[in-house]
Structures are given as structure tokens and as C-alpha cells.
Image 1 (spheres, rainbow, N blue to C red):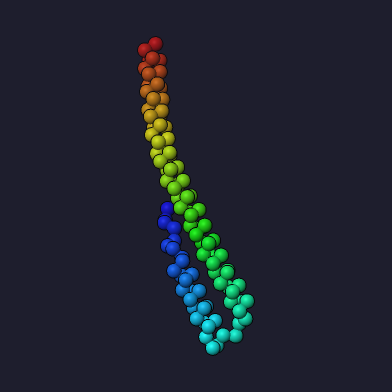
Image 2 (cartoon, rainbow, N blue to C red):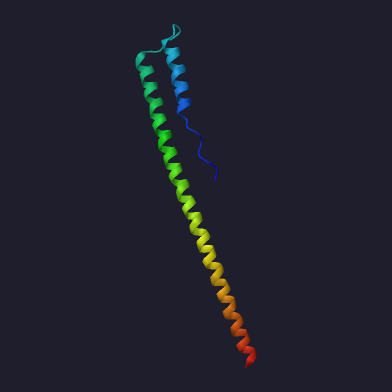
Length: 98
């Protein structure tokens, strides 16, 4: 399983800084309410990314736990197969003895 993507906050910070610089420039022709709306959406994106990252890390931990459980169960299955093989061998020998 590949690791989750790196922290996206620096990228979001860069985008916010670029939008803010453009908004404060003389070339700006967008209303303040639009700028504020975009900034709110960027912060919502930051929060959503953080939530997604936490969720992904939780799933990764669950996968790790389940992989450990699978290894244990595989060992149990292997042992049971050996026991079954031994029982079958004993039955075969008993049949041959009769």
C-alpha cells in the first residue's frame, strides 16, 4: 500500500497567497465578496484534505492490523492442514493394517 500524499497545506497556502496578491494588485477587478468566498472555499478545502488524510491514515492502520490477523490465521490454517494430513495418513495406515 502506498503512503498517503504529503501535506497539501503548503500548496493551498501558495494558491491563497497568489490569489491574495492578485486581489491586492491594481489589475484586480473582482468584488471583495468573491475574494472572501474563494478564501472560505480554500479553507474548506484545507479542512477537507486534513479530514481525508486522517481517514486514510486510520484505514492504513486498519489494513496493517488486518494483515497481521491474516498472517496469524494463515499459520493456524497451515497447522490444521498438517493435522488433517496426519489424521489422513493414520487412517490410511489403519486401512492397510486390516
